Length: 167
Image (tube, one colour):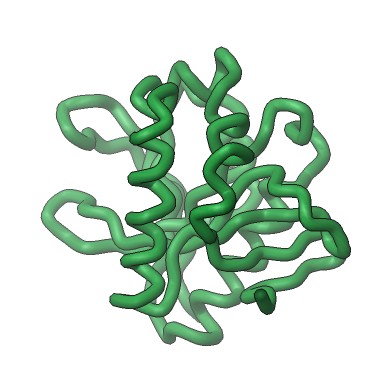
């Protein structure tokens, strides 16, 4: 399957159902479970893949499987999905990495490539990342990728809206 995005060190491609076991591993460590506890269930991870497959059909994009360039080893995902923010539909960059791959700059590299893709291919005015304040690793990535931030409440919980406007 051809890659959607390539960076210096990474390839982002569409998910397939064959990615289920590897994606279960991405969400299996204690840090990931803090923010995605529902993803411990295999059927929820399968639903995640199926949601992205629907997104590809409906919008042409979604979260993409992330692999080291030249390898076929899934280490996480990164991509674009629409999210509700204060009554608006905003395009969000999301990213998740396997525990053993964190701290290498992969999430930042992939998210920056997705930001460029969104502005180049989708002609949107704004791209965001929505992060729980206690998710310090994700906040660090979003802070490196986006130009601005503001606090808000999503689903009754505090969140940070990191964003970049086109231009």
